[in-house]
Amino acid sequence: MSRYALVSAVVVADTALLWLDGTDGWRLAPYAVAVALTVAVAGRLPFVAFLVALALAVLTGGSLALLVCTGFQAGYRASARRDLVVTACALSVYVSVLLLVVQRAPGAAEPWMALARVVMLTVLPLLAGRHLAREREHLRRERALIAEQERLRERLRIAHDMHDSLGHLLSLVSVRAAALEVGSLPPEQRRAVGGLADTARAAAAGLHEVVNALRGRDTPGLDDVGDLLARSRAAGSAVTIETSGEAVSLIDARASHAAYRVVQEGLTNAAKHASGTRITVSLDWQPDALLVSVTNAMPRRPAACVPADGNGPRGNGLRGLTERVAAAGGLLRVHPGPREFRLVAMLPLVAVPAGAAT
Image (cartoon, rainbow, N blue to C red; front, side):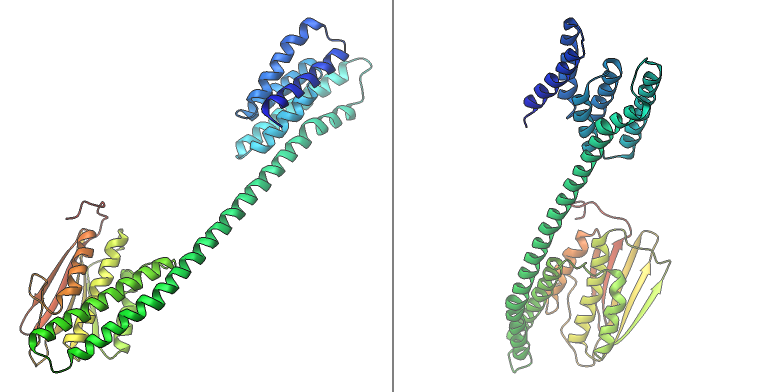
């Protein structure tokens, strides 16, 4: 039913009841206007309209259709406890006034008839509106849940396809590059193949992050470093961890993830270029920053290391790591030496606004 049809129906019904009850004709026009305005604003101001309807019902002894219409709207729009309290108080006042009028009016109906009238014209419409509002909210949540499940299924499908196709291809590239790297190649070609292998591994790691994001998994952070070290020890690496300062949580998730990636990159480089040497992971908590370092002793046989600018056999993965650390507001430095190789990152303890880091 349209708004205009509803207003017309309520005005005609209540005006006709007053006319049949013997109300003078000159009083019907302002009453009809008041009823029309009340119904018109019931959609936007349901509780105000309901209070006006109760007042008109007390003054005229009628307004039956208006009570039903505004009561339903008030129940349908009630969303806060305050709305329910206001409605209950208004009903209590209406019942009290109605019973007082019934008791004082000569030849009036019994009080229970007045209570039945209140139940039929106010309480039932309120309950009906409230019930329909709950059903509407239930349907909305059900549709939202179904839509979310559809999105999750689509994300899982995409993640599965990416993992099966791209992950397999990147693994083949990495394995073949590693096979060429250990073969008899000239130094320049060996470095090129090493860079290709590093790029393939970095691409596989990036793909792994994307797949985890599509699957809805959280990215690893500083709290996951312990599991990372445990996996390295299980693979045969001699890893120890040193901590200093008062440990606090990193507010920025980017900084926490960057700290995890620094440790991961340091362990990967050490396992590849200095296999069998002791690796030390250090977490130094400063008043305003966290210093993360991964140090490994250099092998007896001289191996290629990374210059300070991040170029070299190990530099392909470190360039992406430098950008990740910078995005979190930190700094990454590489310290190659004759006896040890050290990877150091400084990460802020407070969040850095996006775009503020350079």
